[in-house]
Image (cartoon, rainbow over all chains, first blue to last red; front, side):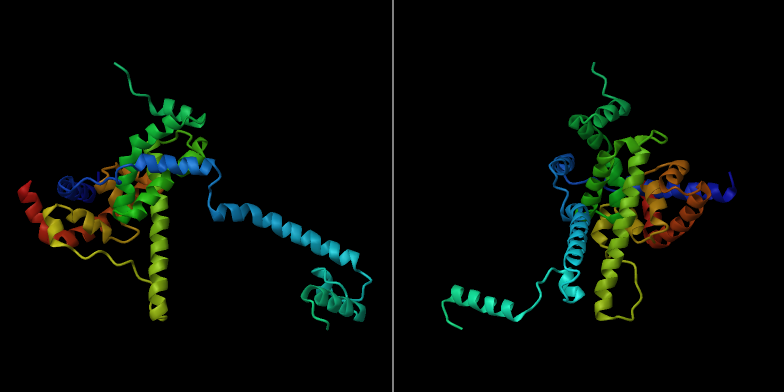
Length: 112
Length: 191
């Protein structure tokens, strides 16, 4: 052993002497119960929001992408903008505006 | 007389889903994990949470323990890694709080609890001083001094060479001696 290492060991022993007189450390009572409660929660699927998000988000993103592609392919010749086609908005025509007006009138009972 | 079940028996049972076996392991290694986590983070809810997370990580994948080290060393390693992550989170949190008021200020170590003279009477000065060490020196000092692990086990837990353990320990102890200088003589005389 290097002489410096033995000095270090001696200092460590001196500090350990002080340490042994310190109050022992422990978790609060019932630690094992708290761990087992978390184990049971995990088993029941209680993984928390980040866990749920990590599993649901990729599926939701894939579904949104699929719907957008379907919208684009179904409305290729509609003449509306790409954004409108992506999110599936119908083309805005005079007929559509009139029919919207009559639907509002039926719902509110007010003649436009 | 009934012999207590060995770690290996309890591990096998845990792997097959026996909660009672897992609970026995938690009770057996609770104090080992507490020594690391409380030594690194100080007592409190944070330490309790990291302690629980240590056992939860182990429970999620007990097969990852291949028996290269003892179970105690393996659990201490998880506890130490999680404690270091918790210290980093604390540091980021303190930095964010500080940067809100003073955007130009550099990140600093989380404030160390002020020294309380009453605690000297309870002989907790070593733990107080360990809490004041840097993130580099604290893990080595916690494992070698507070937990009394050997140099090779400390190296195994921290996954660093034994020579690095010795050099960090040397610097850590020099810092401890500086912090404890007023109490060292008294401590040795009284023992």
